[in-house]
Image (cartoon, rainbow, N blue to C red):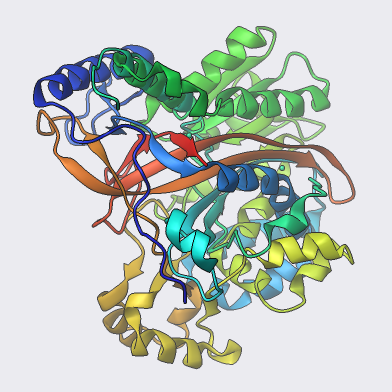
Length: 544
């Protein structure tokens, strides 16, 4: 095992002078609020008030080569998920054990079986995906003297692919501009499919899990780049702005929705955003709507909850989805549709109604199932990739290289052996359930008790994943009601790459990589969700 350095070099020298730090933090907070890098408070909810979203004051360093590899790999991952989503036999067989013990998965599969029996009304799906990756400081291959001396990592590992609620794209660019202005003021030198380059990815990118839930921060991430540009400029480091990559996640996500809308050729129909009854992440959601209305003023956008769709929804004579007096040609599950939030009967009825319609869904029921962790674990089995990627050796090799450390807990699939591995060295692993939303994973020392409390059947709702040990970075995390000035802390980051794909079982019509986000948390924290309160928005500063 190689032993690389475990700290990435900061983009500016730390610590900052206390007076300068306090001045810059106050400017950054105001910039964030005034540009929409904000959320409603969960603790003291007020629909008329916003708090800035937690953010890292200066952009976190990120290897340029690895960033580009992640960007280039995304279309191939889009293609894989699209193929998996359209293989009903594989989905049902893979999820058969999970279906028996996980209530939410069972309800999704019930809808899937219903529409399969009736005939899929709309063969075209829209996938808005996010692939999450982290650098790894521990690997089994020989990194070489140069890697040990220069890099703070051995390889990439993918954390997950998200296929629903691709939010926070808007905040990426804002962060870049904010960090630009701050660097100028200082006297201190101070973030769906074919690719021929994929064989070069060997031994650098590893996938940890695929997920269909919470592909969020597409809107707000687009703000983070201009935000960090402002901060770096205020700190007197304007010359470093060239190392902040452009981020067009918001426009990429919205353009894909409009492309799906165009396919329907019904100009009077709308794009329907399915939202929660109470929305905290309002800026991220609204930026998508505002972008579409400004850029494509002829395209209507409406917001409805599943409760409203259940009460007002019906199918027209051609299976058009009608909600009140609105026809929806594209349905985008923006939020509030994840296994941690179980529905009432009316909401499940609404989900089935949507699936029976000719509206293009994002995600469709099959896309939702394709992103489950159990499916990702199955994809890591030998020779399974050939089922979806054919005999293209370069594609198979590129994807196989990103799979690592995923184990089934089903007894008939070697689950007892996986349990033994986890019990022998629990700090190496993470237990992951089907549900998402933050706070549901089990880490390290807590794993033995969790496994011992499960029956063999209950284990089928979980997978075991090798834990990632990313390199550290140093920075200032700014939070609402946090200390001023904030302390200098150690951080770890997770890169998300957005992709979009549109197509049917037999044909891909649209496939792109469309942006990125960077989410950063304290190195001592297991969970890293921004909306859940444990992570912070960031953007990558590319280093060679």
